[in-house]
Image (cartoon, rainbow, N blue to C red):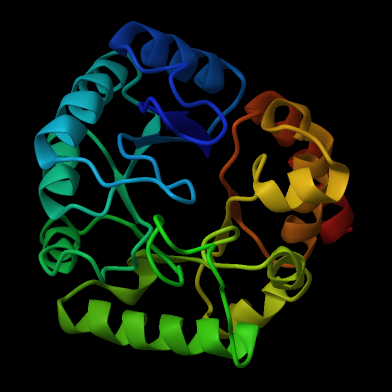
Length: 260
């Protein structure tokens, strides 16, 4: 899953792909580099980020989705949003997957949209909201707390008619997690196989890698690849990254190791 942030303020590539043309050009690059899914987001969820309006988010995402869909009919497109109206407009414009970092908890109509269009849905775990999530994250038991959250959210989704085999789980690396929590999540990822659903991880260029290596986002590739490799070995089936070409190579070798 290749990341396209059509935002001025995302932590890694904010502002780089803020125009329709630059975002499209980057999408084209990610597709050529081998991305199976293009994940398009119009609202930054970096720590400390402020929410934007519905109109702003639609303006940033829908033209890009329309353009990619018309030129690349086979590419899978994911809309990264917590707003049901954005999700619905994105699906009507050609998006295939809803990626909701709130795990269906911000907008009560999101579950209805996912059910109505019968699309795959990423349910992510986050403690708090992006603006405050990294202030003082705390868990009684990190893995069990997240498992409980997933259990409740899966039950909630099914109540709205979402089929269980449409759900993808994302434990939310970097979203309301301490430095050590992120490494623990990757190391114990297989515990989420309990749900028998695909697991997605998004460690790409995040601050826990930057802290460990003392590097800025643009110099965190090797750390990201290490986290991705470990994650795949522990059960991740979708990896959300900025650097698709390099990650594709890592994933191929790790899969050969995993299946040998």
